[in-house]
Structure formats: structure tokens, C-alpha cells
Image (tube, rainbow over all chains, first blue to last red; front, side):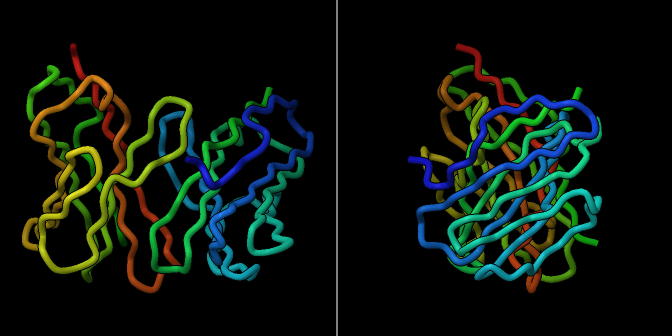
Length: 112
Length: 114
């Protein structure tokens, strides 16, 4: 049973638009993540938050910004999307920073 | 730099046959190692993990993996595959002190022929 919920499932937008993806976990975890999976299925971490504090910020373009209102939510905003942003964005959570990571089903973004 | 290599992009086996999916890692210390499975249009599900101790770890659905420090490997095995095992399998590691950052391999697409 999925306990990391992402919305929307799919989103199609034009170059230059702003998009926002939502993620909520109901596991009571302290740590949340965003990963990007490209068209070749390559997975890379983008951000990690622990107790609403940013702890991992990989080298991603500045147009990407995570937003955490509380421990259960971690949203991702992309200002002015580019074609290379087309990918599946996976949200995840873990109890702490050294425990099993649970993934959501992902949001597929297509930039046209 | 830490990395994970899955040398086989695609593996095809017949239902009921045994399976081994290969994973090699590069890390100077002892990493935490994982195997995840991704079914079509789904997120990743954890199959098994290795933190320390017995190098052979058991996972869900009959999967197991063996850690070898000398070979820097963490191969996944299953004695008898089922058609429902068809999916993409990812090997991953977490370096110590990385904030639980998972470094993934490129994945292996497993196709099970009925």
C-alpha cells in the first residue's frame, strides 16, 4: 500500500511555464526526498529534507525549489521549465537519515 | 567518487529458471546496499538491504543478494522466477554520512518469458 502520495500523476506544459508538484507521506517519517528519473530511467537525488530542514541539495538548476511546510509534505516547484526537465519526479521518505526509503509513484512531467 | 554499475541493461529468462542480476559498486568504505524493483508506471519498492553482518540477505518474494567486499559486488538472485517478476531492477548504495542519499545504478530490465 502506497504511503507516499504524489499529485499530479502526469503534467504536460510548455517551455517557460511554472509547475508545482505535491508530495505527502503518511508514515510519520522525518526525512523526505525528491529524485529525478530521466527518459533512460537514470535516477538521481535532487533534494533531501530532515525535519523541514534542507540537508542534501545536489547540483540542480536554480529554477528548481523544494518547499516544505511540515514534516509530512515536500513540494517541488519549477520556475520556467525547460525541455530537459521532462522526466519522472519521484518523492520519497524515510524515518530518519539512515533507514529504509519509501517511494511514491512519481509525477511524469512532459515539457513541449 | 561513489558509483554503482549494473552491467546488464536487459536480461531475459524463462519462467521457472534461476536468475542473477549483477551489481558492482565503487566506494572506499563499507556502504549500505539496496535492491529496488520498479514495475511499469510505479514507484520503487525495496526488495532487500544490506547494512552489515551475514553477507547473504533475504528479501521479499524469494529474492536474495550476496555482498562481497573483495569483489565490490552485491548480486541479486532468485531460484525460480515468475512472469510477474518482469520489471526494472535497481541496485543502489548509500555512502556513510551522506544524509541517506541513494546512488543508483542504471537498472536492469528483466523480462520473464512464459
